Image (cartoon, rainbow, N blue to C red; front, side, top):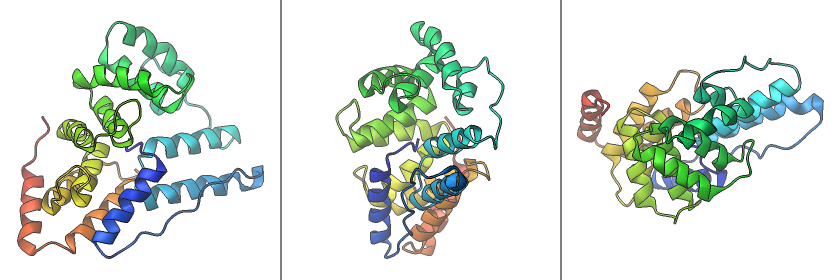
Amino acid sequence: MSFLPRRRLEQRIAQLHTALNNSIEQGKRRARVSRRMTVLTATVVFIIGFALGGYREPITEFTVDLAQAIGLAKKPPASSDPETAYQNGDYQTTLRLARPLAARGDARGQSVLGRLYHGGYEVPQDFSEAARLLRSAADQGDAKAQLHLGVMFTEGQGVPQDHAQAAQWYRRAADQGEPHAQYNLGIFYATGEGGHLDSVSAYMWLTLAIAQFPAADAQRPTAVTSRDLIAKQMTHDQIMEAQKRASEWKPK
């Protein structure tokens, strides 16, 4: 995440592009269609991810599940690690592995289980329980939990909506090198959504996110586009300062 709902992503992109006098073409909403159109639907979902800068998990999960359902991809082998199982879309295994870990107070188990409750995967969607589990894991330093907790504060899901709190959790995850948190933090600085408009910091965090994202990550091109749009409104000295900060950054 970020694992942000489409409505919030649309608002963010609209804010950013209004400020920069530019726009990104909006993707069409995906529709349920016949088997013949299923592959096209998956492609449209990816296009939406590029256009809106969406957190990769819901997009990837939908497409992987879709490909498995129509026989274009095989399900990966069962994992003994809940995080790996979660990333593979094997939510039954994730739930089985994460629950006993979470019950013992393990941050990794709480983080993964919280994300299951947040998304409603193999459990009824429960934002309050998700926030409880993610907060516990985030307080123990789990970067993914911090990222998702930031999303929940952004949206007011299970917690009061509080963009300043969201920015703090994004920052804690970003400081550990979590690229989706770095991206969200960069957008917060670009739009002033976290309470502080700062193009230099926005450029820096987006640059770091770009460096951290795998080349195949659907959010990487959006991060590049967003950073380049911001750069058009910056002076040469501001860009040089942002690049200097990015080059000197080290994970905490």
